[in-house]
Image (cartoon, rainbow, N blue to C red; front, top):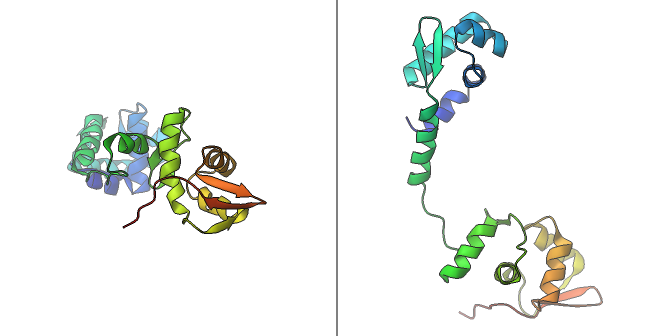
Length: 179
């Protein structure tokens, strides 16, 4: 069974409640009904559908959830997922960026200076060389990456990626693609 099929089965709120009750230890139709607040008929119908799909073993009124099938489906989906695009051509930089960037956002600001420099060099690329930015615009561009814009702004200035004067910022460091 694949993850999409499981997700489809659990998209129904009644089946989701039945699975939740079974996962929490209910073992009969009556126990599932009591734990979920559902009627016996609703539990029986949902259990029948889940059993046909192979997620539940049904023996009369006794029910058992095949929890191992959830893990197997998740592992298969992860293996089938395409590899993420590298964030850098340099494998060492890509390893750092992959650890701290998810879906175009920083998960956290690295504490180690070396890793932080790699991340700062990556995100300073949102600033065009030669363009002056008011602080409000710098904050808006950095907020896309991480909510702590003040820390990012300070690190970018302290490490020489941005220069600040009278509330105006401009790019003064970092890698620049000249192609």
